[in-house]
Image 1 (cartoon, rainbow, N blue to C red):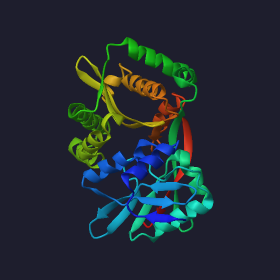
Image 2 (cartoon, helix red, strand yellow):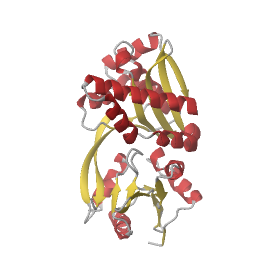
Image 3 (cartoon, one colour):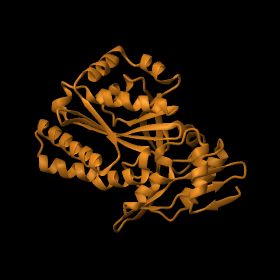
Image 4 (tube, one colour):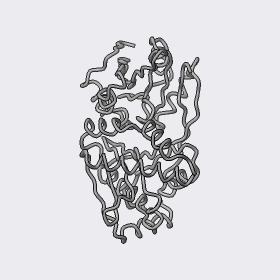
Length: 321
């Protein structure tokens, strides 16, 4: 290996990201800048020059009081990280990267790679690392929107037609107002779920704010610019469903979604939003649309599969607790 640097120059990071056909918005420099700008993380991403090609591993240090710093790629709730490269890394290259990460002065490291890049991590052996099984859904956009539409289930196509024929009004943008309205809908979704489970609403709302803090959406919307879009579907002025869509290069991502369960029974707004995001990804020439993990929730996995998305099994690699 030729060169190893702690700090990645913006130019180099952008070049490597642009050259990687599988790179996602989560692995981009602006995404890391959003995490760092929040004040909760410190950028300590790694750069590797192998002579035959270059690689970057986005890595954020997360400080825990009395427990030191942990390295995460990426932090919880900030998507998958792992390596991007302008060449095809072999097992020997990956072992260099894994050994370097192990050598860092951190209390622990967790790397959750892009699911479509999992094979190179598997091939390296990852000695000394703990494997955590994960599963994400990815939609292949090969053939464009018409081909994707045909791969959807007939029931899903009917629900999209119903949504388009309804009185739903669709808005999109990334300004503070839409971010605020999306977050308010997320809190309402949490409160409705708490009520249905007969759980104390104030406690659930507090937990919801802790799991998905508002600063995360404010920071990413500001730093990502037009690469991040908030979509809101409303009926007669009432928000029914919202989603956050990321699009950069050849990858698109469904990052977050929230809805009003009392209204989605009559108005299939979630189906409409997914169809809008898939259509946008196809028009932009993206090759893949990432729908993320489902936490083992069968109904959510089925929802994603009905659009033609396939489950991708992969592993998160962890050192320390």
